[in-house]
Length: 223
Image (cartoon, rainbow, N blue to C red):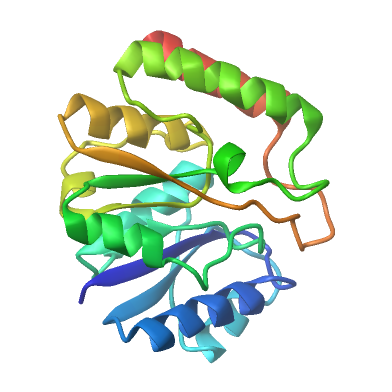
């Protein structure tokens, strides 16, 4: 199998069908051998049932956290490549061709960049528009990765290499860890413009600005 489209999930019953159907459209139109893998992180709604009904493979991840869910998904993925994306509808999972193309060219990590791709009005809080570039700058200085948007949730990578990197972060700081681990391994990295849409769930995002920003900063300092 060439590709796993991996989505972490926690109480996403309002959007999980939308995201899976977008991913299925991409798979159908590109004729790629792929699976959709949902790493459910303890949903108490109907997210798992909806995902399974739509033909996605669902794994249950007991340990809570964005990183914990994704690490479990990476371990279970059957594809040569993994493209991970949030299950809140903020990324267009129906247009993943640019990521697959770069992975096929030999890049080991392909990062999305929301600042280059365009941010829909209301899709990113003002504090994040300041904080993300600052944290990205600090992370670039620490690990040398030429990435402008360390926190973009849409990214693709070589599955075997990711599994060899001893990834360990359980929280949102996983987004920074995986880039720095790839960079320090000498992996080839590129970045492509990625539009950011407004969260379609209608409730507060799982990301907590100050708590998760501080966790990212502590991780960067500790590297």
